[in-house]
Length: 218
Image (cartoon, rainbow, N blue to C red; front, side, top):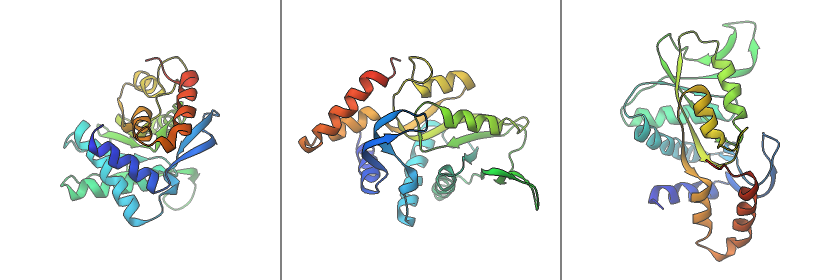
């Protein structure tokens, strides 16, 4: 495993973002591990998270200027931290996010922050994709921006789970909307990391059992 992947998994576990147990995902699936960006609570943690996303951004998108979109609520601090991390590396990009309820006073509208213009590219930054539900919700919201194209989505972890077919949710989203979905690490990286310590045997087996049923075939 690449060193930065191990460092990222250690960061997620140390910050309490990566947990093991019994959880219910947004998709309704019962899952043996959970990735929750809402457990990042300090300045150092959110800054570090942004640096990992920025590393992935430069690797996949390069120095191309896009607009970052952080879906409410967990995507909001991610978008801000990634914008800050990119700025430190010399790439100043705007960002925006949505309100859960459209505002009918003041400036109004559903978006806060930069307003993308026709011809600009948007990059969605999310915490994780399980069945693709959250990304589809984001695309419905972003559909109101005329002439704006989504260029990519970045998430912390690719869970490698089936979406609506036998393919992974990330692959389905990419095919459905015509943009790539990138992750810093995937569930098999997490398994490799866990298998290095025999004390993790139970969690390893539970995740493998889950993937045997819900894992993507492609």
